[in-house]
Image (cartoon, rainbow, N blue to C red):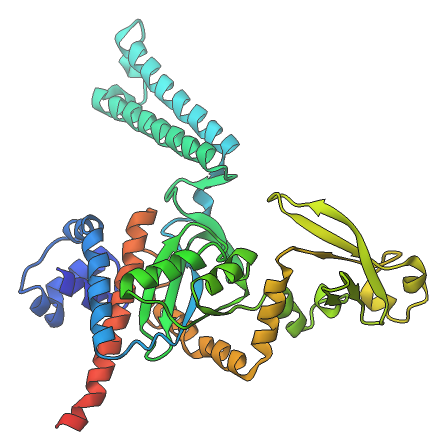
Length: 420
């Protein structure tokens, strides 16, 4: 069965019903299945039942890649991509909508129950609709209504526990995320790809839309899968956080992660001078603005996470007559805030300016980004077939296995002329 699934996923076929169809008419599928013809339920059950087996296979195949010298561990690029859940956004409801649905189905059950009383009480069966005259149909209506009520109550409980505003009734684990230009139920797929042969060295799936909380788990999974850490890790600005930039040096990893403001500056989208245009003097604890004026320390402000940020402000007189004021601020005077760990972002910016930093960061474009594109668009894996986080995670691991097997095939194919 596992051979059939690998082959199906390599062709972009993930639906259990489609796989069942191919097992009945496609010679390659028949050969791999030894002429057995499991139905779609068996195929679906196999995928969901053997999660540990699939994860173990991913690691075993990754070990084969490592033994074939396909994993360099010089640079690993990490990236996240939104993959649509097997659910419609129309099925996403908030607490108020769920309450209304519960009320509607409860009324349906009570109405069917009342109609049954009428049938066996003083009322006549001849004045009831035909579908309500049949006792079995009435019971099915009541059972269906109560089942829907239980489903809605469970969904509301999950919604209350999660602290979210909405929950999807088809796939409660899915979250509304921006995917391209659309906002729809999705999961966030995480891939870590080695730059040598584009081998996937770690993969995971999360319900969190943002990426910055995923870097540490991905690094730890790389270490667990291969028993070592890469020399450098590159990721886009979605992974830029003080915690991540502090974590990587602690693991002796060279990080290459631009911050959000750097990306905005490079795109020329900032209306006013960003904080990075102001030069900080640590010895005198002050900033110098692009116009050469000083911003001195004023006070300290407490942030939501409990940490403090320092506030530096220019003089009214310096800003009033400044020719750069229109590019700096619309307020009377400019101020700049500084996080106690701001030096981490400053050091990262300097690193990304170096020839080595530029070269390593550019590897992302030929490492993880093509892999994401190949899986989603060439293989057609733009939407999950299964539902629920644990089941959809299996699908992503399966796709990663198929990708790595293909890389092994390509390397062996290149060796054939040399050994012939």
